[in-house]
Length: 228
Image (cartoon, rainbow, N blue to C red; front, side, top):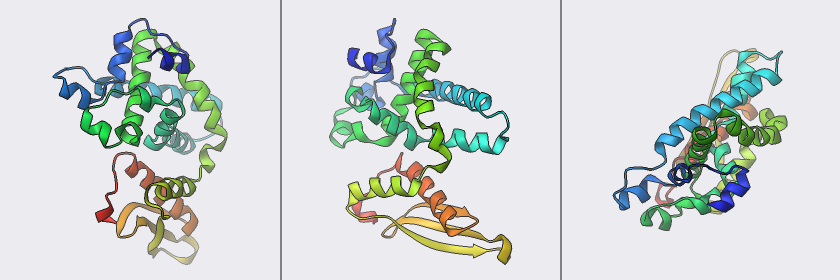
């Protein structure tokens, strides 16, 4: 745990809070313990949302609610949180049940994202909002310039290629509306398995939306080979 405290730049006064943030439900269940990180995850989600919303509000005085919502959604997505967790090697510190550990739980995006939120919740309880902000803001500033141009298709291809040795496909499902105001709907898929649907005013925008929804889906689901 000390190494994780060094990485995040915060030393806990109550080490039990950190232990709880790093305890997956599967580990607690195996040992008949009551405490695991789901409650801290719930709190951390709200803390993260508040800090990100306030930051975007101050930094973008001329932007409308749509821009702010889109930016926040990109920042706090499960896939993005999992990438932050991977960056600080959070998976090495999570206590998992034997079955979850053997199935690769320490690398599963849903577990990483949830644990990241739990750590933020623990920091908030232990040190208050200023310390949570100290942890969140540098990470936030490192990615904000490219947030709205984030290439979800490239990220999805990298993940799928690594896991299944083939890229995802994009299938045009529908094209509706008058010629000057068409709406395209695209399916991101892996073989016969649908990973995400997305819509946009052109095919490129629809594919990006489908890829983003696919990333959100993969953050909480695995894709068994028999479903492909």
